[in-house]
Image (cartoon, rainbow, N blue to C red; front, top):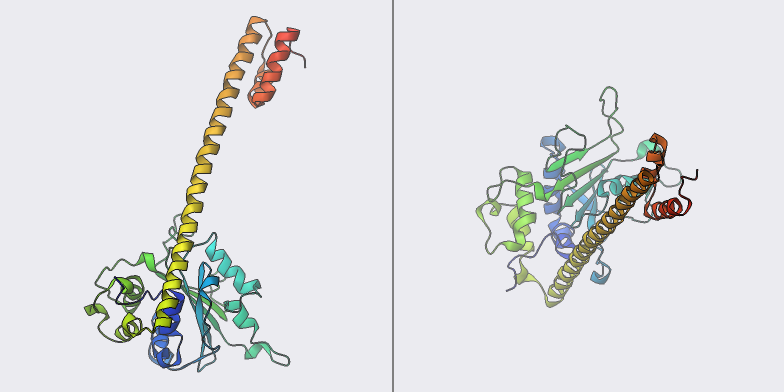
Length: 323
């Protein structure tokens, strides 16, 4: 059975909802919610900085990309979906901000690209990276005994001695969808967006918590009945690519566990053999009246199985401990 609403976490649907001019009011609402902007600080207007990019599904990677825009004050926003976790994901984000030159969607690239010949650093505007994650970036507190990272977290630089905040030109916002706990009764606007991203593809009707705008409008854009045959094909291929990627990750995980168990068994067998040989060496030394002081016992403990076999053969042949 085809879904009533398409999954907004896929690249094609995410851009359909948040990356087109007719629906840019939905991106404005999402940004205001995730950046917790109120009153005069709310974003009223945005301009898309790049035309909609139709990424070939065959080239879809583990990272599902983005919508890039600028508000009236010149602040740049890079909004992206991340469906899969990768090793040291948060370090990759920070690293890309500082050094990346190959990924034009990255926050750092957005900031660097503002510098042109003759421009001044004081003219640079703030850049905000907004990442919606379908996995937990920080399942545990970043520091032992520290506070857990909430579902919506915002990160900026902080002076380490006094705690003063500064260097605000680049900031990060993360929405970790698995940390949503409100069920079918979202309370805050952030809850509503998390509920929308998590549950849209499972819904058959618009539920009361999403019946008001902007959530209702977002669901209507994701309604599959409005898809053209070409859009259906793009969506199907995106979902297949996602499932293939999940399968590859799952297979790699199973292989890793199997290799770990095999290595553990091999190590266990090797250590068991070495321990048996150590006992044989001690027994032979006792039969030959060879004194085993602390140094010799420490040497026996440090030897591996092959070395113990060589020592045992030498003891039996020479009837003495040859230092």
